[in-house]
Length: 252
Image 1 (tube, rainbow, N blue to C red):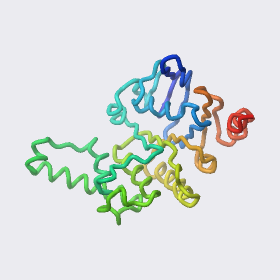
Image 2 (cartoon, rainbow, N blue to C red):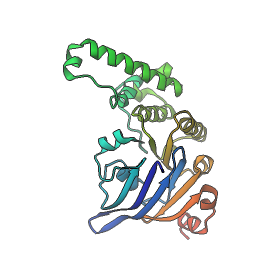
Image 3 (cartoon, helix red, strand yellow):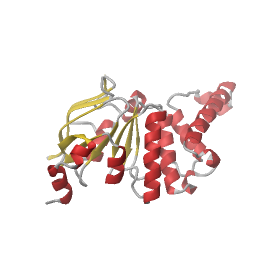
Image 4 (cartoon, helix red, strand yellow):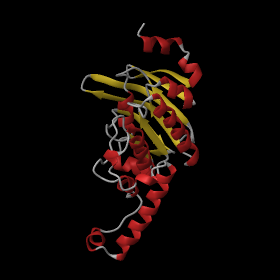
């Protein structure tokens, strides 16, 4: 069974058909890329996969479960987590607390326990602190736990955002242009981080990216989107050498 299977997904905004007849199948543990020119509809697809937009038609199945049109929080609990092109951390919270936000999916105490600082509150907080520290150590951020997220260098902010997403214990991780704004050295380090996440957490990863070096370096398969429709799908090397794909990118 595929980790993600999308069939005939489409959405219209008024009279505009933004995505039409989109199909994709991603197996567990795959590193999969979704690419295409600006305005092709890539982020719109991510927004449908995560419940930000409700599809006009089509089906989204996560590990055999129909999640089409569900609310964002329901989809997150079902197992889809996401990062954004423009990093969306809680800038005024510490590094540690940013990760703990993600952990609240699976750790709960009552409002009363939180207000009165009852033993149940302290027990859950201790568990979350330990789990958050484990994740931060994985990403080499254990030395910055008490820093504000806004004070981290850009590359480390991106790592923190991925760590927070993983704290929700997803089955599928969606990365929206993770290399945006990075210099070449940061991009190389990011490639290593994404591979590491896949291997360490047995994670399935779907990413949108414009950096073709990153795409060709880590993605096993690609889907190319153009004007809201699938232009090509298959093994990365085959897709990147497809004349239609080259034409779409060069605009010839």
